[in-house]
Amino acid sequence: MIIALARALLFGTASALSAAPAPSATSAAPAAAATSFVARVLRGKLIEAASTGPAYQKILWAQLDGPTTTALTACIKRNAPADKSPFTLVADVHHDGTPSAVVVQPATPVATCLAAWFRTTTLPPPPSLPDTSTYPLEIDVTITP
Image (cartoon, rainbow, N blue to C red; front, top):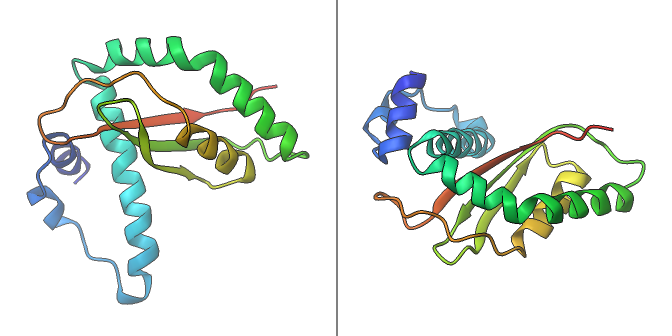
C-alpha cells in the first residue's frame, strides 16, 4: 500500500488512494487530518529526493540555516521551560517563495512558534512541478543541546 500511496502522491493521481480503507464515521475528521499530514510529509520527501530536490534544498538551506536557528532559539526562550521534542513542519511553497498551509506535528509550543515565523519568511522560488502550482516542503526539526 505504501508504494501505491507514494506513486499516487508523486504523480498526483488519486487512483492508488482508493485502495486505502476508509476511516470510521467517528474518527473521520482526526483521521483525515492525520492522513493528510502524513501524505504531505511523504510527498515532500519524495519531491526532495526527485531530480530537482537536492539543488533546491541546497539553495533553501543556504538562505534559511541562520535565520531558522535564530527563530528556533527565540521560540525556545519564549516558551521556557521548552518542550524540545522533535517535530515535523510541512508547507506549500508558491512560485514566488511564499509559504502557505504551514502545519507542524506534534504542535508543541516551540513547533507552533516556529511555524508562525516560517509563515512570514520568503523562501527561494522553488522549481516548477508538472502536477501542482505549489512546491511541497517537509522539514524535520530535532533540537540538540
